[in-house]
Image 1 (tube, rainbow, N blue to C red):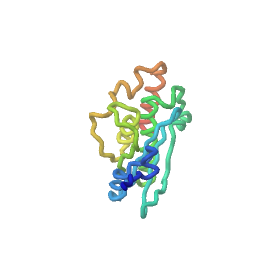
Image 2 (image 1 turned 90 degrees about the vertical axis):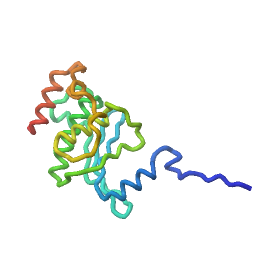
Image 3 (image 1 turned 60 degrees about the horizontal axis):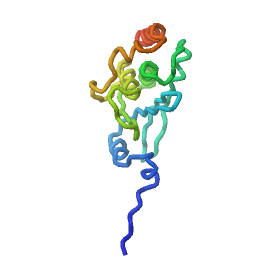
Image 4 (image 1 turned 30 degrees about the vertical axis):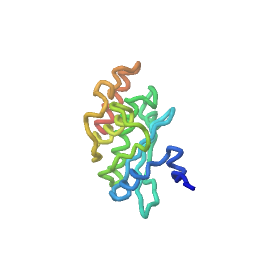
Length: 162
């Protein structure tokens, strides 16, 4: 009689990649976790101690409304701007380096995830990522959006640190 080995529940549900998680835990660096929902981009710094995760801090793209953002909170320019704000807050809290954890989201060149990483990296946070995978500068600055002037203005303010 043969028994079929059943995978762990979170792996069956497509929620956890245990091989990648083991590598994250061995690295001892905090993780930059980026998730996208139907409305927002969520960014968090998570550290692990003894295989227990602790969220140091996090923000969503909804924070852009305090800077006068009137465009969508889930497009590529919003992800980039959220990354800029997030990176500055991470540096203020003493975090200088992080490892990207995008979860089980499929890695696609020029996606919102990599726009957020580019924003965090441009603000001074050290993240190892291939620059070929970032979205183009025109997409990051929102030249294809209907509110391109206000989007560009806010992103430039965020880059200057105002």
